Image (cartoon, rainbow over all chains, first blue to last red; front, side):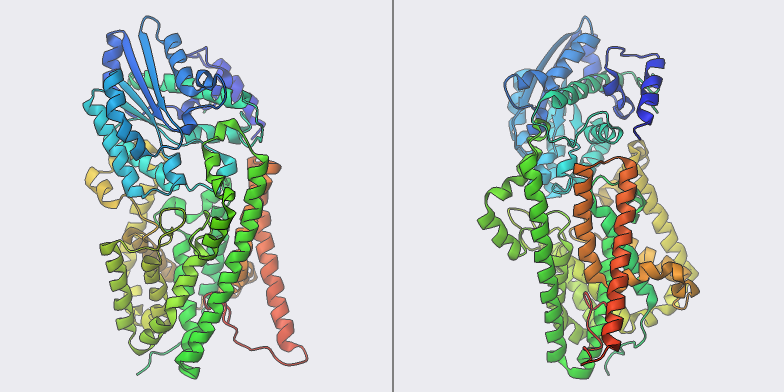
Length: 251
Length: 387
């Protein structure tokens, strides 16, 4: 597989990039960051040149240490949206606390939604539910509840699933929770940002060494930066249904 | 009138149990590209169903004969002895698992995964964790199958007694238990929270169904099994399941699944052995029996020997497979996780399983022929496997 990476990168450079500023390492997984459904509230907000985003998440939406917030993907998403949507006022609020299940986050949602009035809620969940072996039916019900709350508050929803974490792969049974999220997303006709497959591709291709036992933050920061950028592309592309998704060159 | 226990071993059982063992091994290695070939990716059921069904079948085969020859008490004692062996095997595997996990926890502190590392918190309370593991309440991922077997075997003596007297009544009792489980949400609590990943109240149905088939049920169904209508239905159901499985990988196909179908089938509950999974397994069985008759010549061919001998020593090979999947994950972590390495690890694992099974077969043969007192001839295998 390693031999294919340079070919992929070359293809990527040849393709006329829609978002030329994304680093090639992010673009490796661009074809997986494609929204299956549109985001009408975001479209309206973009037309009005004012986009409020609320990121709701647990521990895998944050990075530890001083300045962790600045490098974690919610902040990188904001940065990337500002870069890619000139003339639109972007305001992003992150409601991120570790060890929260989907139901925990739903409980905090109404307050956060009414405080920030977002047009888009990015909701990262699944990992903690899998670790705590929450009843899958209750997990699905919590997803539905959260999505409905956001919709009735006038916000589109993008679901973000678990990270691909090869070292703990044999210890956390993500399967059912991943499937539930996929199915709820299709049923509710909202896009799912498949962070798991994106990171798995990076891991398989060697783009990032996700097995690394390092305590250093550099890889973690680059991964979060790419996640933020790809999420921004994902949100923007979701509202251009006629156009092919960006960066198909890598396929 | 007692039900008849068949006397001749059906090599198809060994073949498909061996195959199930290989598939379970491949599925248990995390992030393994080779696991794409396993059946769980193409329908609702997976190797676990095959394994539980065949184990029920062979348990009835072995202990049914013992119960008819030596009576309820002796046969029950044998079942309990086997249960104890499986318990010991489980605890042994848990010790290996703890060793691997402790090593990983010690060497791993990647800030990207601070949330995921929380799963290792149990290492901070070994007093509680180890006791809960001995009580079968704390079961790490992929270590659920042996505790399920322990429960199934603990219940088996009275169930076998009933099955021998009235096979239909036994099957009805098992189906009733399954229904009550769905009605009242019965399951065994797990530690630190949640429930058993394989609900014994549910999975007993497949085990008992296997036993029922062994005790004459399969013969009674033979007219049905040869019917083209049933074969057609089974194929149609397998195709339906295949299409649904494809929507998991190509989410855009999901829009072709009408909402009422989705609402009806999801979630496909593995814990409680969803009816969809049972139907999928039964369809696979119908199609398999259609193409592979009992006297299928390749069953005696050399190419299938490696699978068959694995199926004949299922407890040993199952445990070895679990151990090898830990080891495989360890190789991915410490050496390389590239796809060629995944293929090498998968192939090497299966080769080791085959070699070990061959070694056991050889040693048993030597023991039987050798001088000195003969060991008991019919030693019951895993869930009544080896005969």
